[in-house]
Image (cartoon, rainbow, N blue to C red; front, top):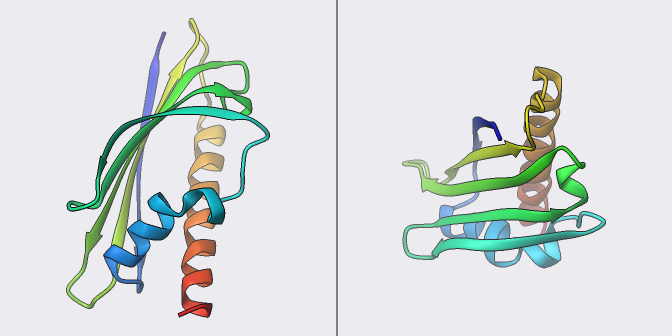
Length: 125
């Protein structure tokens, strides 16, 4: 089994605590669902605005992944906004390789989801 890791940082004008609540604590109502997914919460720290979880079953694994682990940290910025730092670790089955295009697609989906949540929070402030 191999592992592919990528990091993404997304700036936002939304305060860190509010973004953490939306992205992590309210995720079940704000984030579109996979057709099916089973995940395990590995760590949740509401004080330090960090969350780690692993998808262990479901459509997101596309038959080629054992699991996907996410580490999310929302960092406050001096201007009152935040930066969402997300590390994704794709654990592949056997010798399966994921090409750069698939990684790029994953990053773009993460960015779109984050920006959609940001827009929702701004519109409903």
